[in-house]
Image 1: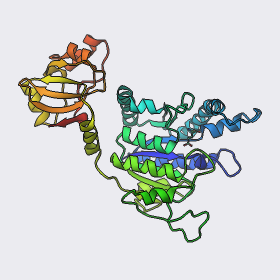
Image 2: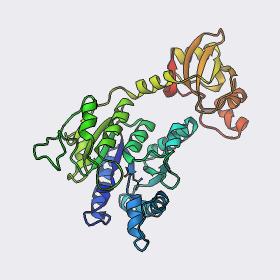
Image 3: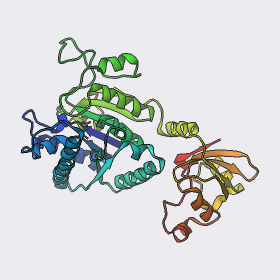
Length: 364
Ligand code: GLU
């Protein structure tokens, strides 16, 4: 299983306001257990600003954005340093990935990030993700790591997103003020009432509260990712959730499959150009559910970048499908009709063997 695990600042911090290293070690131990069982894990960890603040105690505290960005820059190194030492105990390699909204909304960057994450996960490294707070001013930032974790889950086609916080999940009322509040074990539809329940429960640390977690669950479940909000203070929470399938916290079942969600997305996109394919490729794509290789392409129309959505038509002009181009139009023109192993020689670089990968292709 592919799992995205998100730690809020309240999982990383102790009540005394220091980094809770014993808890982090405990979390890392559990992730190592999942890893040993063959699960692929990406970690989204908040806490850079918190750790930065701890390490710059002599500075007069300010609240402005540049100051927080500076704290994040200082804290991110220290935070990753701690993760590196803890994962090293279990012989696990970690990798840092700092993302902003534009990295995930721009097509070419999205594809690039996706390739990098896929490779990291396949080689069993653990990407440790945070928002790139150093450049993340208002216009381009995602703003909270709950939404970021949902975007990462979508990016890597995760099976599950586990958001760990200091609450046991979503309650029927705010449990801090209402003794009758009950934990909701499963939310099958994220309605306005659910959003309303989550409102006004902002956490004291970090950025998000329950409401950004519900937004994240909505985003993730719509792209095929089951989401669980649970407490990071619960003993053995990750092992119990993943290996024992225990019911802990609040579960949001996925609404559709990854493939379905990607296909809907491709169909909703405006088309930026056309690739014309020969009879063999048309058959392979429509009947064989195969990727489109340069060898099967006879022409390309339009001027589009890598990552654009393009129409696939056969030589008679009949529409066969639609997909996300792995190369820009000029590159496709240069490699069309050629073998995939010639791509590197012709272009001087390569983004893989396919012009449109079958995961990014919808047959019409
Ligand atoms: N990126 C911020 C940090 O690492 C945290 C954002 C959040 O708490 O959601 O400090």
